[in-house]
Length: 497
Image (cartoon, rainbow, N blue to C red; front, side, top):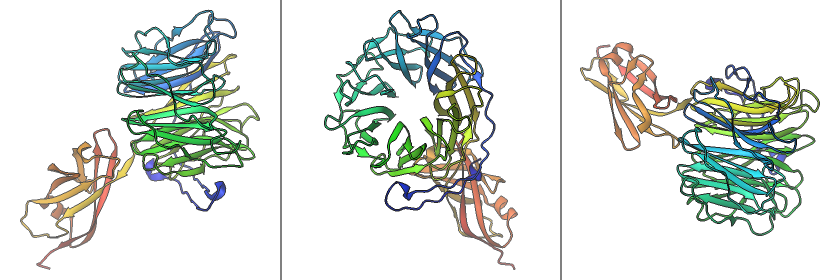
């Protein structure tokens, strides 16, 4: 998969049209069939998905047993990576319940769900500490907020929960819990001046909290741009916000964010003649940004892109009406090199009616997608997934000696392996390290940021004849990620000849 990457061309100048993209087809494997998760007469809408290990968690809203304008909060899970699903559970119900757009986050066996109740216009929170078996009572955790859009999101790292939302005055606001949701901080307005924030999203990595949002006034004009702000100390202090689109003539919408270590990825809709999928990213933990890479070429409009990332891989889904003239389908796109090259658009749904509200998550190279569609005569939640081969990443390889005598009676050849900053040599499974797909490493030793392994010299000499070689070394990390590297210009000599 990773070795069939597409071709891409960047042309840098000033302005939005300065970056162009070309793609070629790539085969990433076969998606599962669509799996229907809900079976009732109510309307099931706005699914949100999170994964931890083999456990997949989905929150959604449904008016089963309610009035037409009422919406209850529901939850469903799988314990075996989506092969089978347990019956849905209604988490919050009642005659005045009007739940909107749930968001879900997971750390270990702790599941955290937030949503807005349109009756009181506050964010509500509920949690499970036993992998979804039992749930706490719901609580309201914010004052009155702006509830007309999905203006809230939740991120988690260990016991630290972070929630971003747009308050009743459209100001970007933040609240957090440092004790797994038992208690919550006082809300804080992050951008108090000249800001109208909507469509917020959050990503959390250790003490780094990354927030993006759509703002119609922050840039000094009425055309919405996407802004970014971060905290490096678990939400205690915040750095200056950054405009990561800067497009004064065309609007930006529907923002989402993902991260992989210091790489921050943001997807959003951008309005040309039609709304398209765009992408901005940072390679240095949000300090600087590459902006406005166009990813789609829809002949109609896109809506609601969602993004997830793992290792070097990025996955995006969105709604698109190119196929049926206004009736939406779910599309998918992927990159296996941190956004440098991208696959062609892949249509995931072929439903007779509209498919909407996709969400996506990747875990251990298995990509999971949920959405709602109307193929059954009312909105139901659907799920599909794909298991992708683990990528092969590049490693630094240096074999010592660079020149060796084929008649030598030495015992070992030493090989020094280094990884880029996104990976750790301590995670290399030494038992998988092989020279030229033939000779296994005998033993290894970590030396700072380098893994030194040794190969049996007699086996190497038996494999070679006099000449110059680029010797390949391959192996795997403990999570299954494959790596390979070459030691160039290795000379084998035979003094007798």
